[in-house]
Image 1 (tube, helix red, strand yellow):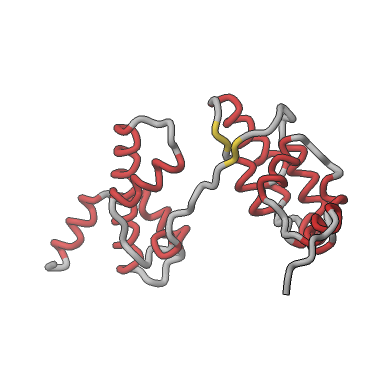
Image 2: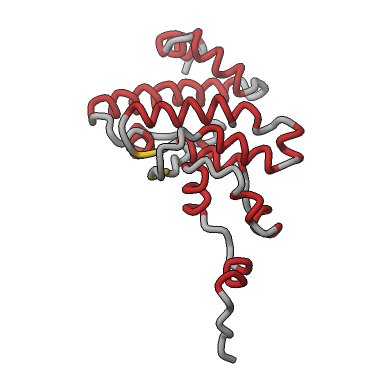
Length: 195
């Protein structure tokens, strides 16, 4: 059966939402864009995910800094407010307010560190973290990335050790304890325990 060619406006009504058009509308501060979408398309607008996209752009440090800080100030802190959560258009409006309105930007997705690594269920290596940091900080020099990665991997190793030794501790408690002890403290503890 041949596909029937739809009129242009009907074709728009039936297609999925285009993320890059949505981001361009945010860059333009198009407050009315949300109202132009069909109810099905509006359901696909997820302010929380858009805030992640909105906050990270490629460009000069000033514009990158502006988008990051403005998204945090105008949108992030309201994402889990019950009124914003109940009325997605409010989420759209906060994201529009985040934009400086200086034209279309290239937004990039910043990946997360794997869930099992973040929750201390798996170990990580400096190499894995280096790959992550290269995506997060593409303009940073190699030495700084390596230093950040090694520091993260060392801290993660210590936190994983604490999580195994004290399984009843919560992640924030492990984080606090990690800031109080050193690798030497762990070594001394292991020697005292006969390990």
